Length: 475
Image (tube, rainbow, N blue to C red; front, side):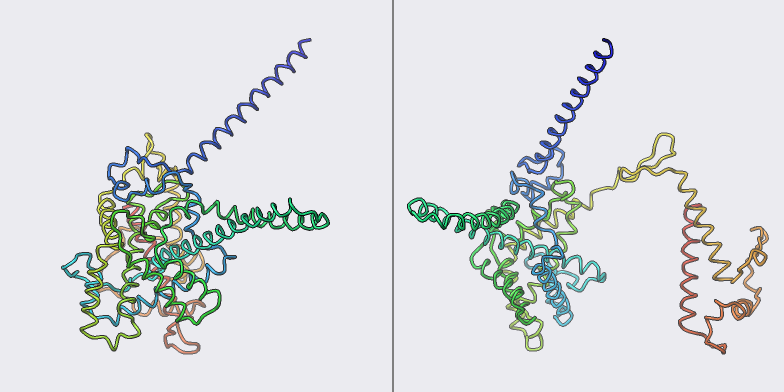
């Protein structure tokens, strides 16, 4: 009797646990969906007023942040047209940057200046770091891919509406018709069409927020379609670059007054400011470097639009004056908003500290770096490993002492720093009898081998780096 009660109680407990788990999963799923949707209210902890300055929270309110952030990602391998668009954008940015070298120094100073009547002290030039240059180009590539995705979604949405309208007409005709032997064929065809329609509908749903927010202005769709056509039809490279340059020109030459987000570039910055992992809008400290890249690319593209690098030899004072007029004309527009945002973001970033990135436990045995705990004992293991590696490199690769018998130890107090004491040719003799040391000389001679010496010097530098690290850590 007791066994039956026990089994009944156990079953009830399992049912209660199962119900709790199910309820927790539903609540977690609901919370996850809520996190995807942006709210219009900014956090009370936003003491920098960054989101008030940008207006992003109100712009993307009610939108699915995950869908928006995925829309501005770089293309996958199977998205061939977008991949070609990325390559085209990279080539165009590279061409624009290369054209800066042939531009007058004063003009480059005007390009860099963010003020109306004051020239900048430094001219705009190529970035010293090639990787940074490529990273900046990627931001513009994401703008191009995002625009192409939205354009494709617009076309898919229009085709979907047209097909649904056609289906409604066909259904009314079928009800009035009396031919039944076509019904089976029509049903099979409609099944295939419905599957295609569902695929198109899912794509349109994912881009629903982008379709709603992207601010198409007059002529921009046609210019972007021309870019897409040039890529898909394999136009010559110069024609593709010109088509892309015209599209970028339409985006940057747009005037913006009351509604900031009537500009596709400023709307793109809001979408780019979404952190896909946290599903939150980026703070100024995490976004300023992205904005710097977009502004830099916009500047070099603007120069190429107004003063084409291919016509640089024929350009004179009249072209320089025309450049200044065009600069003044569009300074208070899209670029004005972007520059203002960049200046505000940099100001916040400069004041932002890194406090809280590193913390220690109460017993000082565990260090936490950005939430990741590191045992302090592992630092000792790391230092001992560096010492062993430095000793091994010194003996094996720099002094060519292979065996333990050739090595020796000497107390530090016995070492004498006497610049007058020399023992010439000791290292040369060691090198001539060691297989690795012989590689520093040309075969059969005592002439230095450039490749062998460079390899040896790299080993010396590596040893010095290890020694310097050890001295700083233990000093």
